[in-house]
Length: 439
Image (cartoon, rainbow, N blue to C red; front, side):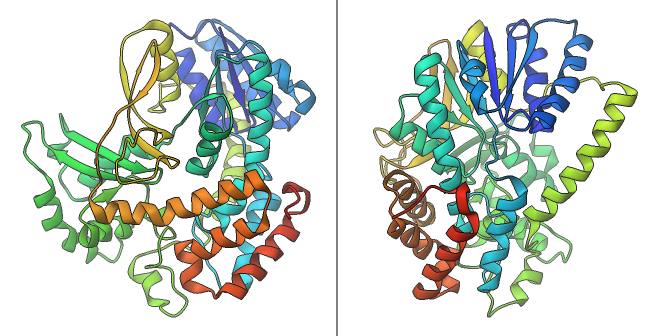
């Protein structure tokens, strides 16, 4: 069996996912095809993964494919394709995503999922994913495409609506959602055997139910503890806790992410909110710089001192593949199209995040019914932007980029329409050939 990893220069993530596969008996004999356009980063991944493969008993085989001209060969015959690319990288494109809006007074924290940063990231990523889909339709038409690339709902939604590729979007936030909440509120004794139900959209899926092992609803106790948490000056998860206070439910992704998915917290006229909610502006650029430096250090240590033992992570990818190959059943939180109204009060063309059953037949999304009306309303403020951005990517009409930015909750609450249009024009010009030509 062949497993292809697109964006294998994302060395830490490749190490986790491929390392996880090496821990699974049903997967360890696979051919692991690593693909990247950066030959140096690809070689670094190969060195680390080859050492891990030998440490795990020498099962399977690692192949490397550098450059677009070798992409079809990397994909040919694959059963599974893992997508972890970053088009335009931190430098120059993430820098552009942050610095150009900053000139207009628009600040961001992460900028990879929604907001003007998320819009631009989707517009430069979707054309590359379209090329992936064309190649897959030709050389591995039956493969499953496991997408980890943000903006998740836009990229996955595009693949599901406009390509024949069997696709599911996977995120890390679902697995740790309720554990983070209970731990931060001092309710660790409720972790074991807890029962939860989550649904919504990526990075804003709602913890609709949380019960202890005896079925007792934990939300009353959670809500009683939130004010004390919010009063702590050092608390770093205040936006999500504030969601509980105002909307009744906790969300899957972090507070630094959710601070920019709405019109409430990052406001030029209310700078005191940044300190009140401990919002880390320009967080993602800092992470990018730190990750680059950390990897340089880690790579030296790994090559000098040998690869440390890999413990299987909580990432879904290896367990999805293992279940499809070996049988059994496994539940994930997956990003899928809202076909047949899995969430009945969100539109069918939306990409939603819902419980999914994995078995030998594939990935089967589960219907969850209606979200609480206020949760659906919050999701729709994001879905509007997602659908318009996909429309812009498909039609190449600049008007849809303007409209996506105008309807973005954070952007629209800070800037007037004419300024938004000018900022979008500046961003398109700054991105140059990283974007297609819009009309």
